[in-house]
Image 1 (cartoon, rainbow, N blue to C red):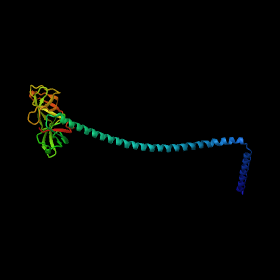
Image 2 (image 1 turned 180 degrees about the vertical axis):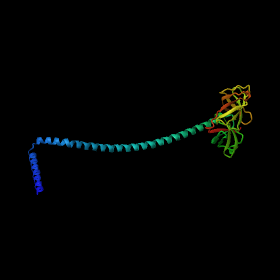
Image 3 (image 1 turned 135 degrees about the vertical axis):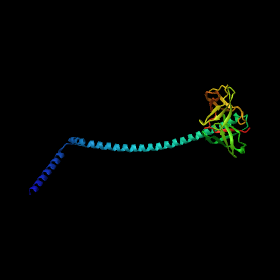
Image 4 (image 1 turned 180 degrees about the horizontal axis):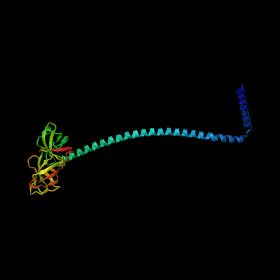
Length: 271
């Protein structure tokens, strides 16, 4: 009973408050509404500004992801262009190398006009400390025979040791079993140059006459003795003279004129 009366009283109070608010609002002047608006703006505007900032931030993120997508696409295009440029550069280098080889090929014939020669390309190499041979693309069908000398635009290469119909094997002068009769161009003394195990582009000069003057920088060429190599073909340059207790045993190191790791074209001297 008591609770029921209490609820009725609370209802009457709320109704009275609502009526009072309605009466007040109906009598407020329009000018006074600005205070109400200001009061509302105080709470509403920060919320509205926050929502606007959130919207702009989301829009900015969308633009960011769009830019990232474009950058990825541009990066992929640049990679493809770079790959194409690298391929073009490789093709250019190949063409350049082929042109240099052809130029060397032509110059060889012009350089050794005093000999009857056959030009050839190197098609295989077996250059090591124990066995130094190359294979060229001419053979018995071209008139090539074992024992013929082989030269390049730089100097002496070696001699033919075996042939097939279309190829020939050349024992280079740096082979350990190779031995060449040479001349010191300055003093005209005769020495023997042999292949060595120590380096691919080096020979050892032995049997140096006791009265011979040999120093670093001296040029070595073929002597023409022995019947294998013609006279006057450059062999290499003296890089070091090693003196021993007995002058008869002194020797020298010779750097070959030909770089056998890079040789590509040669001439076979047929006569």
